[in-house]
Length: 367
Image (cartoon, rainbow, N blue to C red; front, side, top):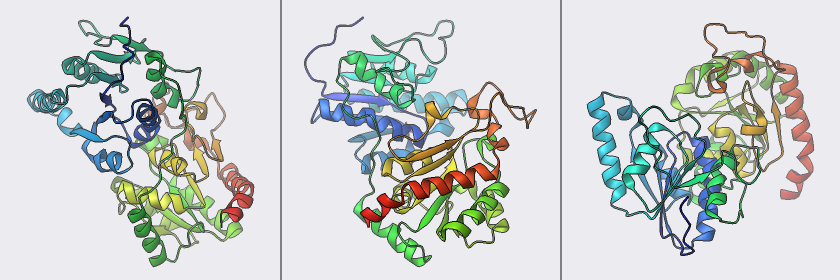
């Protein structure tokens, strides 16, 4: 294994190409690097839609982007996108790369960038295929610092580099300009700051989305108890679930789905009294702002992917799962299993009531 030089790294590439939830968790790695190497140039490689969020919230000083759709296109388009990406990255002359994505493509990129110090995982998340090369010369454990949560996978490269762990919880606060936008938007819809619940009914796969009909039933019961408003949030591809919820709720619901940038969404989540939603990127965003979270989980275990750093309740049906979606489920793949569909309305409502009561005193002090 490479012996790490005591000299500080000045130009660092973090390869993080996945989803917004991964970006939020990986912000802890970036913050530790910033504290260890003040003034270092920290660059994230990620999908183009995350660029403004990553820079606006100080996760990285610069971002190199790529198009996921082109990377899944024809071999020629994929080669063109890869060439442009690597060419841009090599211009930085990195002295350290950290491959968080741990995929065939990310390993290829790390090798082609060819920094002196290259951190990868040992063992990798997926075994290397025939003729595939592992370019790393510093190896991180699958989970660093003895932690169980997935955030410790993203912190593990620090341990491999001999860097002290100072920050373990994501902390992302909205920009003042985005807070003003959020407050204006809430005012327009007659939602008071700290007087509404942000509900996210979407997820990356249909099987990870709790049924809209159950969301609607839970919303009506929670609103009847608490008197809080409801704001639905999510991306443009989640409008169908939002429409199904609105069609079934007696309580008034404000539909913000598909209308917010990530920066404004963070500001709206910060103003919420509570977040209720599926295991997803917005769940991690809400937690990173300090908003209490009720998270709904399926096959994924909350101890690995639950909200961190805030008062929270993670709900998961009993396991092993009695499959309710044969033909759609992939029972061994947490990202494509439908176990959350077995979660009943009653425990979700009770969790929301409990968390609202538990955090009421803290809310009053904050006011």
